[in-house]
Image 1 (cartoon, rainbow, N blue to C red):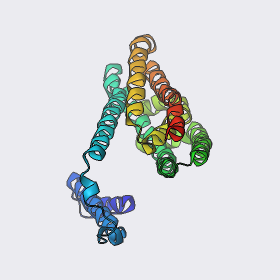
Image 2 (image 1 turned 90 degrees about the horizontal axis):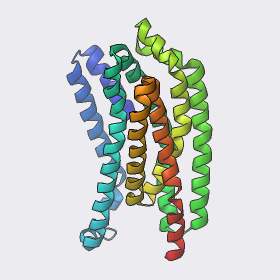
Image 3 (image 1 turned 90 degrees about the vertical axis):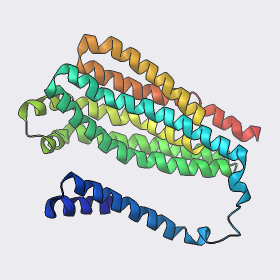
Image 4 (image 1 turned 30 degrees about the vertical axis):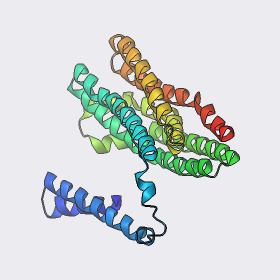
Length: 271
């Protein structure tokens, strides 16, 4: 789906000259193709009336748990996006050049996040299977493997950013003053993947365990710490204070979720 989106973007924008509308068309078409592919791959289940328990779809207690889980995730996502927006909001206070530099660095971080999220997504599925099968040892192995693989991959990405990150910056802007600001902050985008990966993995673990309350509480705690750090550091050291606050935020996310992991372990023995 993503590959199709990229190809359609190139065709609609570069060759057919549809501009922004072409990007929108490419997104809609690729999303619809993804939907059709999903329906096709699950056709055997969807057309098998014996495997679909219609009555079970409308059990009120199941819907209640589902809705509560999604409400907690929505709260988590709103606070997380608020932190990301702070790059741009505070960037306006520091001037247009720092604003542009922060936006470029933010896109670079998103690039690493997409790569590391693959580990979080896979751990989410495997954790769900382990809990569904009541296999605590498998759960422990999944958590250990995900954290180990995440640390290795994030370290590789961090090192690459540190040594060749300037090439990524040069591809995104030709303005020399913005490039120089980005170069000064390359150390932060090198540190960010290594610190953030643990929050990604733990987030996936708790999502796989359907522990929405813990995710929400951890995010509220982390967001509160972020607000305190921004209030203290930004007036003192400017944009460096903003990046320091965001690194602390991601580290706090990982720590707050880690302190709650025992609740998942205890669920194996309680049931």
